[in-house]
Image 1 (tube, one colour):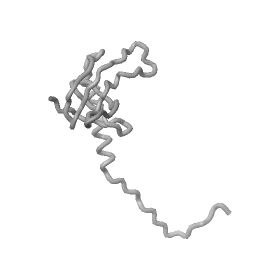
Image 2 (cartoon, one colour):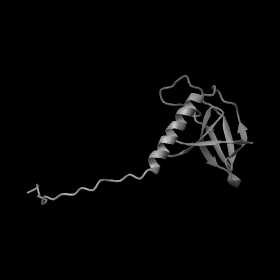
Image 3 (cartoon, one colour):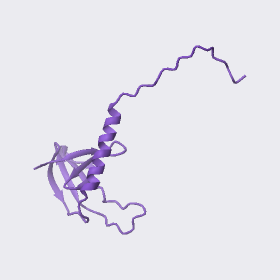
Image 4 (cartoon, helix red, strand yellow):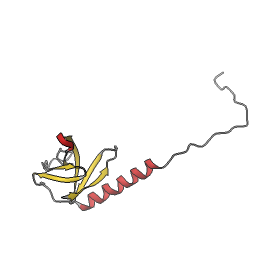
Amino acid sequence: MFQVEFLESERGHRKVALDGFIYVKQKELLGGVVSYECDRRRKRKGVESELQCRAKIKILNNILIGRLHDHTHPPDPARVEARRRVSFLNSSLSSEAIEMPEVITTEPQVDIMR
């Protein structure tokens, strides 16, 4: 059994990093099992030569319980590390409280629309 690493996408969705590959959530199955597919499963716009990867994993309680199909591409640890850093930055920014400065004026307000 492998413990998986969860990352966050630019849009706040959950991704999984495992063995140099990145997976996106496909669907929830019975019994709390969640199916993830390789994030290169769908063809990307402008990339004609890219093969569609059919690799999938199944996770229960944050633990890998199954794999389906081999990847059609090599692992990319640098890409996983880049995603890890983006995920860290997203979580750091969202956890900080953003305070808006108060605007205090001593001059009377003038209606410029008249």
